Length: 225
Image (tube, rainbow, N blue to C red; front, side, top):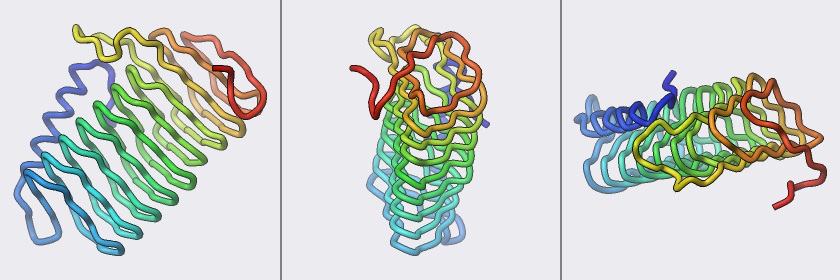
């Protein structure tokens, strides 16, 4: 499983995505472009789907093996599925009931899981907000600079890790990530913070052991601004 342990690894991951996106189509079950969006029609089943400069749209009830892009977003409509989603510059959104059995990762972009969505592997980015509604993440969440909105009723196994920024480049302008664990949410595993964060945990949420931060408990639907 890929881990964002340092910024250089994320850049290397971007190179891998680029390489994958440039591979030619194989036996007709793959779709590969250099420029332009890729759309998988509702109910259609394909293998690997990739582009370099463009977004990938996987329509309702469609299924792909992997979806990779470099400059573009990836979206899974309700009840669509994939084994892996990766981009470098762009967000990834799973709509209601969408499922990914493996990892969902971007370098610079927002990650969003709607109610009923599920990721079996890791959810991770370097920079960009991470939003998990009443959805499930099986392999933990990792970021360097991303703020998080988890819940209400989010379930995360494998813990949370916010890495220290070891890059010579500033990914976040010195801002402090804001981590919110909403009512009814359950975070299994260790919450490990290698840099300063603002951590708010609902009094109706359950979390694992904390390292590197102190939780501010709150009641009601939202923490204070």
